[in-house]
Image 1 (tube, helix red, strand yellow):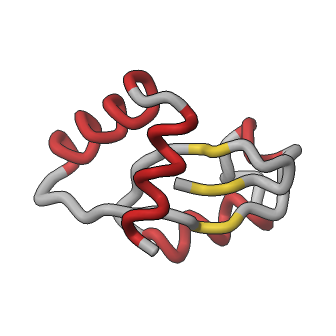
Image 2 (cartoon, rainbow, N blue to C red):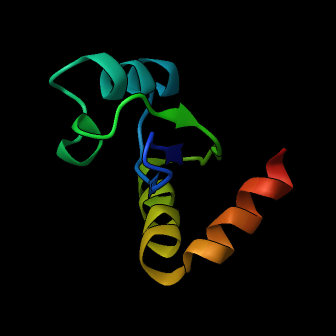
Length: 78
């Protein structure tokens, strides 16, 4: 999960976390959402066995959790 400069949160999946954060910050390969909200900072991540499991978890975080719930999740990792 990324925190954008406007304090919004962005959730996505990747196989290379470091590369993907760099793309969000300095490349046209970053998401359209993060392009206008740079710089972004990595605030939360999870590892999953395969892409299918990662996609299911992303959906739960992105669509089923409120901002408050996401912030609590971020706190648990810190």
